[in-house]
Image 1 (cartoon, helix red, strand yellow):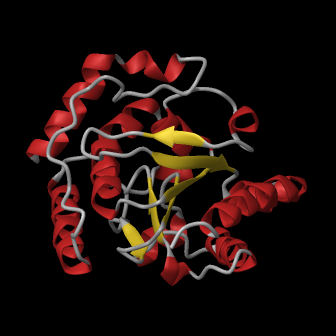
Image 2 (tube, rainbow, N blue to C red):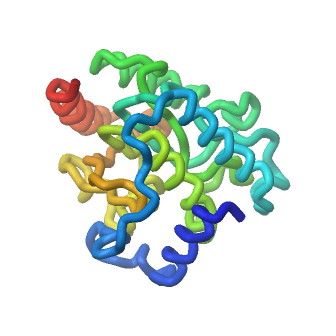
Amino acid sequence: MNQSNKKNLEFIVNSGVNYFLQDSPRNWFENKKKSELPDPNINAGDKKMKIDDVIKDLKDHKSNLKKTAKNLVVYYGNLNAKVMLIGEAPGRDEDEQGIPFVGRAGQLLNKMLLAINLQREDVYITNVVNWRPPDNRTPNDEEILEFLPFLQRQIDIIKPKFIFLLGGVAAKAILSTPLALGKLRGKWHEYKSLNLDESIPTIASYHPAFLLRSPQYKKHSWEDLQMLQEKLKNVS
């Protein structure tokens, strides 16, 4: 196992799996010593090498999900993106193509981004879990924990200005809470990492797949997108 992965996973396990039972978003890294801070001058080439290392480690990682999936799905987009979008797990179309958010939900996500003047190529898109769960079921807590170190490494490498969480699984993984998405959305949270010297403003919203099934929630998603758009106005 990659040493960084091992360190993060040990920290999570030592914190207790029941961190998902907290009744408010929890900061895993509070009062922890920051170490191995990324070089602030890291360029896209350096990031590509580091992301390639994450992909290699994911390929080498022995996961039960790998046995029933076709393709590893890691990311799509800009390595220097200001915004990182994190979804749940690959679906059928993503599993076929090895790219996140390419099915109907992906098409809706593209429209959502365009509504705030962003293209897919402007952002970094990934998922909590990188192999498709059988029958598109929701990843369980063990699977979220299993892949969380890989996701944390991506965040540390990309160092986005903002994180936009798509759905309850992403909110549970990043905000470490079982609270319903309706109670989390509409406000900014903070993501902190052992390897970052600044927290990242984070917002949770609905997954595009959910919006396809429940279009009445699109107005709430639009409110969340506007909050992100407003923040982006003040970032160079």
